[in-house]
Length: 254
Ligand SMILES: C[S@@+](CC[C@H](N)C(=O)[O-])C[C@H]1O[C@@H](n2cnc3c(N)ncnc32)[C@H](O)[C@@H]1O
Image (cartoon, rainbow, N blue to C red; front, side, top):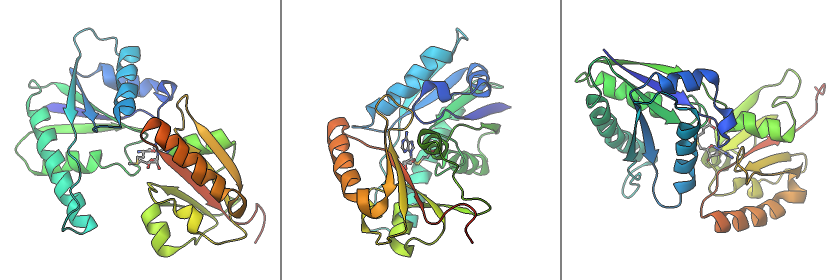
């Protein structure tokens, strides 16, 4: 039976790659590298660098493939994501079909495959479609949340309190609820619209890369500075990935 390794590679620093990930890469005949279009070349470059640095098996083939853009016109968010996953599943199916019988392929996933990433979901969709016989394994990776906490030298939770992980879209809809809220995928800088005198922000962009930027402080004091910094960085690089923790309260406070 064919086998797929879904491998978390961390968030931009090749040293995030674990020994388990390196072994899973070298167990593959083919490593599939996604290309996510103009402006995201640096992300493809990180994946290539990881392959150059850690692939030791001489006969491994690196197969790059284009990831289609999600179409949003005339569709709800869920409809557009579902249709997009369907398109990617077709591509994955072709890639997996091309593996030799009994062969192994590897997909390198940014951060960890369990966190705001649909590789597992889409691979499962290909399997459910039943036309190709394969199984798969998942190798965990360092997430952008861990990279954020490490760079700020903070624990994520307050003592005995929960942590919520959400998106910019949800934060805009629901407002700031919990003690510790991690916000990802925020293209609208929703933090700048939160009016809460008690909130602190721990923000980071390009975490793990040589261009990493981090800022922290009372949200109302530094939100405007982060907006400017973010806009300048985005302009300079042509892309940005950022994440933040919003925190209210203190350890040992009921
Ligand atoms: C599609 S999600 C993928 C998350 C990834 N699977 C993980 O484990 O971190 C992309 C979001 O992750 C966050 N992110 C990923 N890498 C990052 C980085 N190097 N620096 C800052 N944020 C990052 C950003 O919020 C970005 O919008």
